[in-house]
Image (cartoon, rainbow, N blue to C red; front, side, top):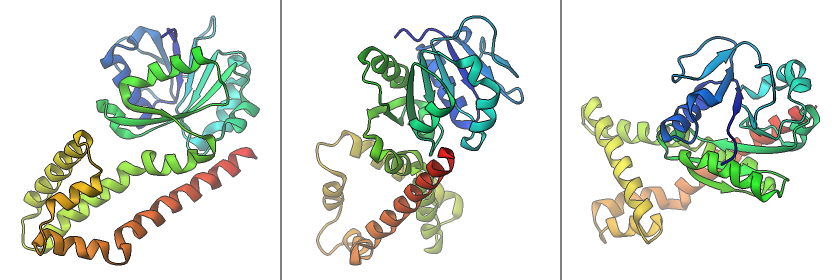
Length: 266
């Protein structure tokens, strides 16, 4: 990877998770990174943070990791200084490449959508860019690789990928909470139900990731004909209740991404 010097604008929960994982994995060292924050945060050793961009030459890459609603403020402050930067990577949900290009004159723009498990190297990072520069695409892929599963996606599908993978952990956490609550409703102590639900989801996800068959087929392996698992699956499967609920959940998130994209276009 040739992205040897990186500036990050904003470093909240997601930006911080990415940053710490990059350093822990060795893909970047702390002294290769400058962070611009509105207030100091606890960052890994060697990472420099300030209220403004460093002086001197431009870095190899700039990562936009502030809130999407701050894009115009950041552009007004830094667009001129960043003109000509080789690679601009944006993790701003709902901000399309064209909207970024209208504000920042970078040589290459890449949209990235990580999710929170990147903190432990088990996340998902979706990438899209109009650039077909193989070297740049390889560099960005190599930068993201320590964070988890990295895939280039069709720009037309980026909002849906953001809803599925970017927002997906929140939906899954709600499911874990609901699974534990169902255990409590059936007589389990709350703390025990939460431990059981967490361990069940963790083990099941690891098994599904390693299996040679689809998750739906694994469900059939657990369920014996006429057994208790089958009776529970009957509730979830009736009129495709679970699929319908999640389809509308993803659709609502996708629509909101599209709304934010329209707002960012101005």
